[in-house]
Length: 462
Image (cartoon, rainbow, N blue to C red; front, side, top):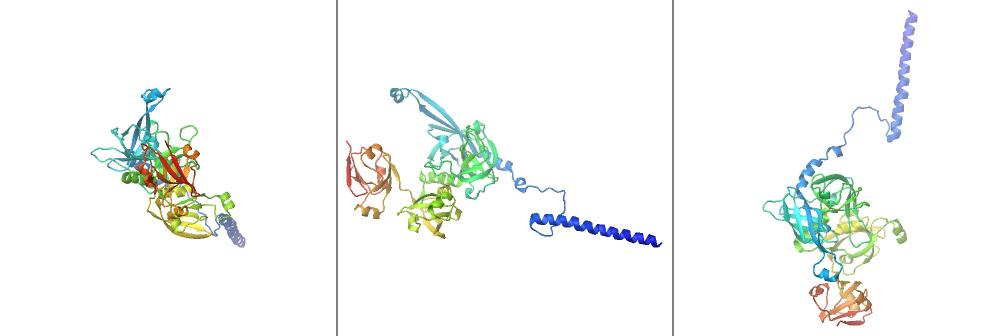
């Protein structure tokens, strides 16, 4: 009997010992490994057969966005006349004329038939036809266009209201956000493709004269999509599809759209003013990088470095100086030049903006009133207004300054950058607006310039 009791007690002790050893080494090992991985002590491991759902995909409804937008994107047909002949006689007698037809897309943005498209879709058009998603065709009127932004505005008419797409705030879009591209690639009408925003503020050419600031997406865009809609998952307009980067002419994963804030501002300018109103800061410079920061001996590698300030513009009046670095506009971060130019493209002369700058490692916010671009192109020259202080230094009471001269004849006569134009055909030139009275039919007999040294030069044309 004693042996049976002893054996029973030994078995109980052995079982408790084995259970203690198992719990210590097994659970401690699990907790230790998880603690190292997560830097949190005492994490309990609880295996589960459940798999979490990706809510970012689950909540995206492409069907609803497509249904909201597909009837508001139209097919645009551009008919133009081109001439190709072997002699001037044929050219001036309309010989060798050829009809060219171009195709693209457009976006109806109001119930009374206003349409935004790309300038290159309707360029040189003699007639423009618009076909809606219900296969009805309308003759479109070109109300205005802007070559720099590649935006044009059309108008079609009917008694019934048109379906249209609402504008969204493109500044609020985020990289990684789902988007739809709606258009007519290869004349395949009413085509919808999906993708994400890959990047913002893209400038495709740093060395051209265009201040580009595109939204980049990987939604498939091909020939014929130009002028179509880029919309968010609510079906609201965030961009106008404009360009692709491709070595083959077809889509290879990169497409670009003019932000809706830029397109909307240009659209409203054309409707209200008949042209594009551009508000300027009055500074020149470049986007910073590590190399330029090292050369300038500054601690910033992002932002817009100011290397010159126009004395008669808003930036100068607000206290911005050469050597300042712009890091924000209205609390929107400025990393590179396309950030700056893109935001300013949404503003007009007279608008007040808050400019965040860094000066001597100190952050400063200054309020700047944007001013009108007074630079004009005239006879191959670019001229600008002059402040009274500059005129006074040259003992002049009026005149406009040459800031660029590509007129070879005038250049050969000595007219270069810095010269001041004061008179044309006995007409006193006080500002660039005075040039509007001189058109292509005006015969110019004489012009009076002053050199940067104040020397008067009279040019007579026979």
